[in-house]
Amino acid sequence: MAGIVTRIWRSIFTRPIKVEGERDQRRAVREWLALHARPVRVRESTLPFTHTFGLGGMSMVLVILLMATGVLLMLAYEPTPATAYRSIEALQQDYLFGGLVRNVHHWSANLLVAVALLHMLRTLVTGGFHGLRRFNWVIGLSLLAGILAANFSGYLLPWDQLSYWAVTICTGMLGYIPLAGPWLQGLMRSGQEIGASTLVMYYAFHTTVIPVTVLVFMAFHFWRVRKAGGVVDPVPPDPDSDAQPGYVSTLPNLLMRELAVGLALVAAVLVFSVLVEAPLAGPANPGMSPNPAKAPWYFLGFQELQLHFDPLFSILIVPILGAVFFLAIPYIRYAPELSGPWFLSPTGRKTAAIAAIAGAVATTAMVLVDELWLHSISDSVAPVLLRGLLPLAIICAGIAGFRFYLVRRHSPAGAEQVQAMAVLLLSCLVTLTIIGVWFRGAGMALVWPWQI
Image 1 (tube, helix red, strand yellow):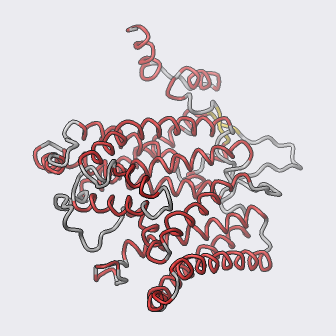
Image 2: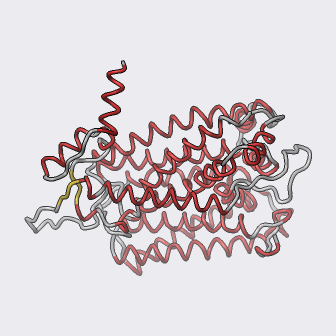
Image 3: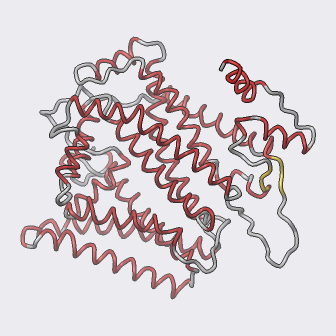
């Protein structure tokens, strides 16, 4: 057993890597265990930083940071309502660099959500979901769900007012789902109310089940990227040309770039964690809700949606429709299957920009109309009609009309149309999130950011 461990250690860290010639480079990649996630050669046109911005590699670095700091936090944390908050305070005050470790863990988790979303958007607008990459898009969405689950389960662990009531709000939304709502709410709370069993369950999932699941899906995701030939080429092959795409050795051309981006990211997270403390409110008090009580920022778009839709639509119907659309994106028939450059073409760039602006403007206008006018007549009309079927029908008609406008005015290809619709929906969600974060004050009333 010791011999096996020694050989593995040497294969990862101590085997000399010679890169004088192409044969040595290939042998180095084959023999160094840490490089098996990468092919021996990559297309030179995929190396520029602005093609991918290193978002996939950044996600992996942040996951490693989270697991490393998470293990350290487990040494001081006690998952009971009586001791959880006190252990966080002791971590920040009594342990050398304890506060820094918590800051790195907290900010890495929040940054991971943003980076994963940007990585998904990059894949979308470069058409990286065709052919062999179809199922990898689904795996990527599953990874995004796992990242959100990891953040949500860890959000409760400090057991302060901020985390307690945020989880109370998010789990309370499930109660509006017909038939299965109360059961799902009880399952997510491990009982009728949030208490000791909830905290232990979230701690167990946050430290075991979810990290293992994310690691397995991440490894599968990277393997599928390699089997598909790497990231999409920003320079599509010319069918009329006999020229072969240029390839270069992975080591050092790709790996040195990834190493530089990873080190820069770690440095940025460390500097930010030194300068900005992770939030910690007062101890959780089930009898006193903060005003306003908000969900975590990555769920605030859905909380904002709940203010304008009947719960059946905001919690169940609208999210399901959105999820089905994004899962179906790679399986829609495209002719041709455009991929490679950002936004696919000049037409795709123009239609995506129009979609982003239209989504932001339309969402803001509908929020204002609902706040200033529809609330005053809500008592005289059935909620399912006024806050469910009617706005959903208006939104669907608006999306259909917007697509008709794009086709008539700009004549985009099928892939560019789907891209524009996805950007439109993401723009709506981002706008709702911004409103929820910076424009909702006491009682979830609309206020200016400086009035919060």
